[in-house]
Length: 598
Image (cartoon, rainbow, N blue to C red; front, top):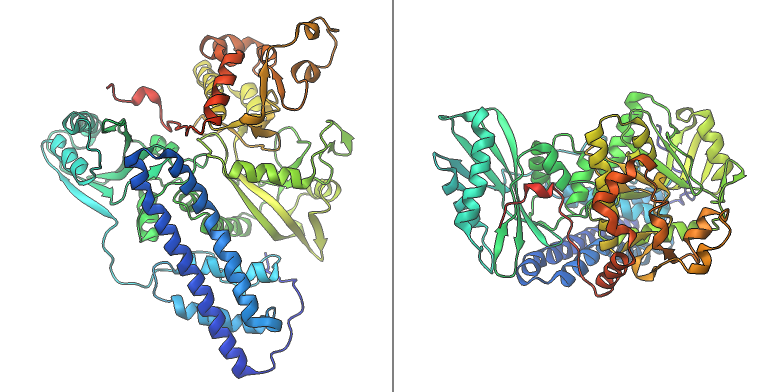
């Protein structure tokens, strides 16, 4: 893709001396804005330890929202300040070239230079509404620039393994102690050590030495604190994660995770970000990549709260893939939605979603009575963004003004986009411009999974997880009003059921759950299904959930053996009361059978 800028025509610079002074002032103000952002980010993150120790889960949730909003808040202030500084020269492109050069000098040699460049780009895109990439005024490289600083202090503590692994784990727990103290540190150390010794036996057997390295700060999320590390044994790097909980009477180790799939679930794109207090984020990412080699760098940055730089890393990955693979964008497999046009590249791990101009039409044929506007849909996605994802909501990145060559689009896809989303998709010369879209990780839609999966045990686990999925969503305060449209649900490659379509979600506090009125039961049996289930858009008859649960009829027996409570009014009302009272739910991101008995 050849970058191209189609903003306002730049005006000529009149006074080079004044322009130089303006460039220096603007660059300094942007750097100061970035410093304000990083200082506030650290300040909020520091609270996580106190929240965990004091069981302040409400404050923990408020911190998560405050940090989520921080970037846009600071960016808005900086953009306004720069506009005031530059006045009528605000959109003079040549001046911004000088600002970019000055800013690059101000951050040179800093370990956070990559984050700072992302922040600078956010400012320029706010000012110019840039379409595609404008390399004259933006920092853009296919790969991150190397850090030009001296040898830093390691982001981890190292522990040498000896004959008694229990003593090593006891030392680790001592170094990561809290107020209140551990309920029984000796017990937890013995349990963790037993699992490590068993796992390491094929690697080191009786005589091999090993080393344990643990990130210096715990990773806080919801009600848990995770000690994240790795075991270095011979030529192997083995993940090590200890989930810690504060039980009121003391802290305890819930389990130990020692495999890449288990740890990957903890860092899943469907979970909210961690609060971890590490200054050298670049070295932290490097450490995480060593134990999660299949995890995209973008997702790792997002997992520690740097969402905007995660988007930068995603954009780099997208450009590299498009350039090297030469694949074309095509319509994504599955059922076409009434609200979104969804496309992808066959070998790419993400899908792109564009809101249709007329959500009630699919290829010009009316298929639903939805009247949602684009603004309504965007509000729904913003609503979900501010709710805890509890491992069940696919992380969604929002992009504006992307630009690709026309030749990269399949003809059928381009025809659909220009027909159903012409307000957001346009042709400009030999390029396709996408004014707004969402990007999500690929998952397998649930109906396709049911059609394709042939292993009975895998089917059982997914069916049971579907029930857990509905309960987790409810506990987080989210209710999918289009409950039985299983095309909104997907299965990740780790076998977890998630929600990826948000245009029908509502706060569970606003939903009403009741038994179906008797008079309604005696009505004409041919009344449309949706009318038998819902009286109004927010009234739900729980009796009907058993008949229209979205699970194939022959698979419902397995589901009901475990999740029959989902078909009761009592369940939904109790969850609604819990959420309305402000209780913070914590969803276990690993198999509960791995929990230590207490």
